[in-house]
Amino acid sequence: MLLDYHNELFALIRGAVLVLSITYLFIFSQSKKKEYLFYSLYLISLFLFFLKYIVSQAFIPVFQFLNYPLQLTAYFFYILFARNILQTQKFVPNWDQLLVLVSKIFLAFIPVFVVVQFVFGKLILDKLIFILVPIFTVFSFLSYIVIAKIKGKHVKFFIIGSMIFILSANLSLIVEVLFKNYFISKLQIQPILFMHVGAILETLMVALIVGTQLRYQERKRLKAEYLLDLKTKEKANLQMTALQSQMDPHFLYNSLNSINNFVLQNDKEKASDYITKFSRLIREILNNSSNITITLAKELGILNLYIKLEQIRINDGFDYFLTVDDSLDINKIEVPPLFLQPFVENAIWHGLANKQGKKKITLHIYDEGKNIRCELIDNGIGINKTMNDHSYLKGKHKSFGVKATEDRIKLLHKNAKVYLIIEDISNHNSSGTKVTLKFPKNR
Image (cartoon, rainbow, N blue to C red; front, top):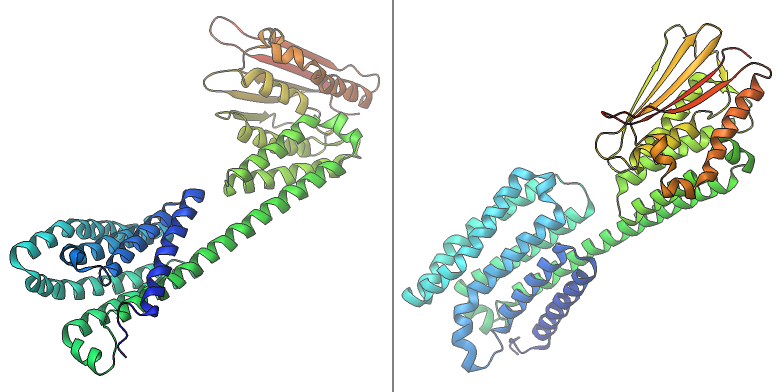
C-alpha cells in the first residue's frame, strides 16, 4: 500500500508542525523573545509548503508557484531564528554578517523564482534549484563548524536538528528527481516523506533547546532568590544597637530593595556586583558591631564600600576623592566604627541627590599634631537650601546619626575637646556643604 500524502503519518506530522507554530507564537507573546517568533513563522511556512500535497485541484496551480518561495521563506526565518537563539552577533560577529547576507539573498530569490517559473517554466526552475541547493548545503555545514565554537548544550541541539533537516530535505529532492518511480512503485513511499520526518525531528531538537533555556532561567531565578533571602536574613540578624549607632536602617532596607530591583530586571551583573559589595559591607559591620573602636585605615575601607554602593544607587552616580596626610599612620589611630558614614549619607541624599550635573564628594584628613581634622566637602545644593527642602524636614530623624557620632567621639576621648562644624560654602559661582570634625589623635 502506497504511503501517500493523505496517510495518517503525513497528517500527524503536518498537524504537529501547525500546533508547534501556534505554541511558539504563544511563547513569543509571553516572553517577547524574537527567536520564538521567527521559529513560529518558519514552522508556518513549512506547514503551508506541506499543505500543497493535499489541496484540491483548483489550488494546485497556485501552490506550484508557491512551492520554492515557501521553502525560501521558511529558510529565511530559520536563519533569523538561528542568529537570535545562538547570539551569533555576540559570539561570531564576522560570520553573523554573512548570515545576514544569506538571509537577504533568500528573500530576494522569492520574486526571482516566481518570475523564472512564469517565464521559462518549472523545468528550468528545477535545474536552477539543483545548482543552488548544493551551494547552500555547503554553506550550512560551514556554518555548523563556525557556530560549534559557541559554548552550550543548545548549540549542539541546534546543529543536530538543523543537520537532520537539511540532509532529509536534500534526500527528498534527490529522490524526487532521480528515483521517484522506484520509491513509489517498489517501496511504496513518497519521496517527500524524508523531509516530513526530518522536520519533525528538527522540532524535537528545538524543544530540547527551549527546555535547556527554561531550566537555565529557573536555576538563575532560584539562585537570585536564594541570594536575596540570604541577605534578608543577614539584615534580620544585625544587632539593633549596631544599627542605631552605626548605620541608618533605611540604608539596609533600600539596599535590599535595590538588589530586588536588579533581580526583577534580570540584570545579573549589577545584582551580583551589588550583592558582593553589600555582603562585604554587612560582614564588616557585623565584625565590628561589638568593638568600641577600629583603626582609621579599616574605617576608611568600610566607608569606601558604603560609598561604592551609594554610587550604584544614586542617579548618574558621583565622584569620591580621599586624601590623607602622609604623616598620619592610619593603622594605629583608633576611631569609632562608621563615625563618618552619617555625614557622607547626608551629603549624598540631601546634597547631591537633588543636584544637576557633575557631583563630587571630597574627604580630607589632616594631621594637626595632637589632633586630627576631617573635612568632608560636597558640591551639593548646600545645607541652607537643604534645610528648607520638604523631604529633609520630613526626615529630620536622620540627624540622630550625626548627633550619635559626635557623642561617640566625645565619649571615646572623655574630657578632650571635640569640634563639629557644619557650614554652607555656597556662593554665586558654586554650592556645597563642608563638615569639619576635629578630635584628638590619641585616646
